[in-house]
Image (cartoon, rainbow, N blue to C red):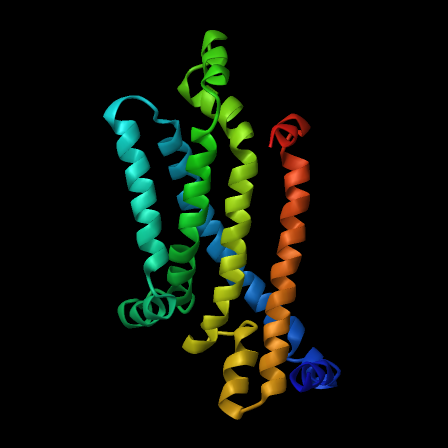
Length: 229
């Protein structure tokens, strides 16, 4: 209870709402890291999941399922902080690269597996009907399989984005900004009000993300597909 009261008092301090260390500035930094990591994740995992899920014939279909599952499990097992330290040691491409590497590695499995599973679950009758209408492979994928798979794809994206938001706090370990600064710097100063305030902000941002994806789902998923789900 004392930690919560202290965090609430921390939010009322005028200096927390202005300057480069203020909440608005740190929140924008955190959102920027998260959106950039999420965009890279989607660019990698969404096309891969769509293509791999679309392959259905012969030994290649079984092989793709094995590869998707194995690679996703392997990526999830990697320690995020260890990846961050390794990225700092190996890369000199820019300040954001060390933080983006673990964020993307962490988030790719959720989008990849859900996209793959969403496409694979499309009923064969729907694909056969589309092919009977003269659609070719890419048309079947984009016009039939993708819309039906959209609920699972969005679920994977939502999971990935929440993971990224939560993990982006480690940016503070490599001298970057974001909401993690309140937690890391607060720990160094034994300022528990700052630590609790930073944690609350991360939680609020993650909850807000849930509502954003709920709205996106309503706009992009057809009522018929939602009813089937």
